[in-house]
Image 1 (cartoon, rainbow, N blue to C red):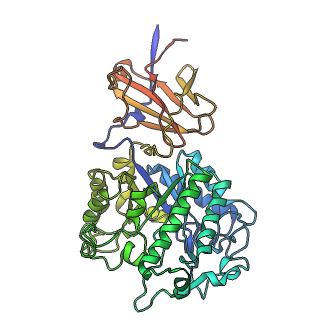
Image 2 (image 1 turned 135 degrees about the horizontal axis):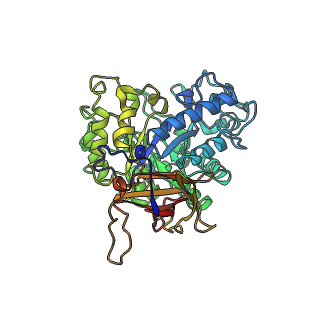
Image 3 (image 1 turned 60 degrees about the horizontal axis):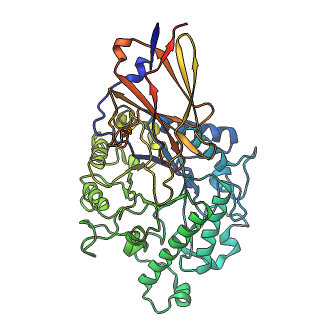
Length: 507
């Protein structure tokens, strides 16, 4: 006789997941500046730092995230050994001091992230040099000491001068060096280009403007400086590692409608274009960046920059590049609107109902440890209770991997499927398992069509990726069918192969 093998009942849950997409970027920012998220303040112990990172990573994996955005260069310093910049003070307590016992935090974090099938985006601040001019630890080989003429003090922070051509080349060199040595999935820049304005104080860049201004008005010249470094970075990133993405997370308002007919119907006091000199729309139009994450940390009810207004505006101004929304998870409880437990779920629902928005990134990591208003549970049990793939970027890579190879081990009570790459040349992130009651849809050629099917299970390509089927009732699961695909490191998907039902001879 034959017996049918099926998944355990516990894995066959059915919750309210209408509209859950197949592709969705789900990420968390992990900030290291001032020990916001990692490592915790005063934790300079290598083993405990690793424990902390793994604990946060596991929490985010349980919550359904498929990427992290990890700050590795917060202030012209490094969370990795570098010939360009000193070890970060937020890693060891003193800038320039290496970890003891020694380890490479960046290599460690990338490995742990990839083991879980998640993308690692290396978050860098382009120009911040000294976080607190009067209190920060500054090593002798820090750029502010080696090249003091490159540095401008504004408020209590020191910045590399964006108008200095040598500074632009220096920033690009640091990123090139990182990409040559680490398996990074994306380089990610935040919103700090020219600094946010301080009332009554002008950014003191007279010297570089006099030298390089070339007759432009100062605002146009400043924007051209930021444009230049973005273009140089874009070229360098794709030269060093063709498959590496380049993303920017700007302030949530490009320009107000009162300033520009293309602007949003907002009344923001500062904007990307006019105050940070970051012309995000130009970079998107030109294809200089691969994705954008506007920081929409406001509530729906915010008067000057309402969440819904800006969500709609960004959906119409991403120019074919993926747009993910930066969400203010840390805002929980901060005002009457963020004390409404429905605020975040309403934002997520609005994101999914808005065209051309591909996911979200949450600020910041340790905010999740409090599980405010049960939002972690809301993600796990409702919005993210099925895994999502990250949409591929065909302008970076469109090559599908080969279908996976299956090896089967049969025991008395289970059937174990081991997944392998179909070709040695394929570099895989993992394997996507699909489930349906009955047959999957087919296209006109008779091929199985999975483009609109959500993923049932994602299996990272780690040590012996496998799936265990257990003996279950024929009647209860007789209509279930399973297929599996291989997912490349660049998120391209192979053709599917059938996985279930299978039959084996009884012992």
